Length: 284
Image 1 (spheres, one colour):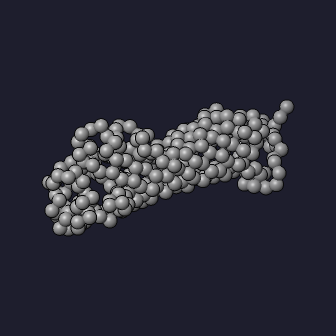
Image 2 (cartoon, rainbow, N blue to C red):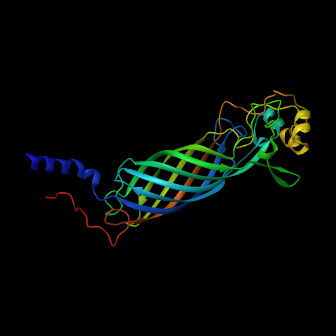
Image 3 (tube, rainbow, N blue to C red):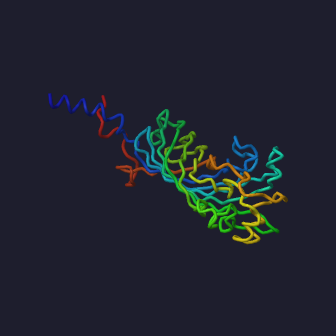
């Protein structure tokens, strides 16, 4: 009976321990975009402002269906009220750009299974989700020079009269999620396409979040440049007038093509040569 239990355990475990474990290293390139208070349509990703994005990654394939991925990426996002169809948004007349440096740790689920080593499962769509962190730095163009906005406290941050308005951090967490499809061109080379959203935990990716502080208060406390870039409507504003929507944090996207290389070994972490197929599982 003990031998039978061992045989039964082998047949249960083998589908999950079959030799699909390996490391994969790769590069990607594509585009990044943004969704936030300055989007031309606040309900849609701002595809009119696409920017080049790039990155590197390393994957560890646990089995045919589950893969961990550590990625480092760079992109840029931007938006301009001048692109909006809304008259109020055009009068607000704000704009920004920001570089983004991100790192993400995600888990991928290969829906059809993926086994590139012996090319038995060469194509699979996949979905992914995880946790990430990113650095950003919103800027605005003024007199032909790009000015960093965070130090200017354009929404009254740091003014004693508004203790609840504290300077925002330029590093934030995110939840990356999305999907793609990967193809094993050979047992060593993979290509893929992937698109994903980044749900952030900041509303200041664009330096716009809540309400205006009166021009004279910003001028007195934070200086002329801050007052100028806080309100670019050409009209004076009062404290409490709507500048952004604090109820929703900003989002950004990354879409890319990738090329990667598989590294095989006896345990999936290097070693010499390609493993022999089927070792460790019963065959008949």
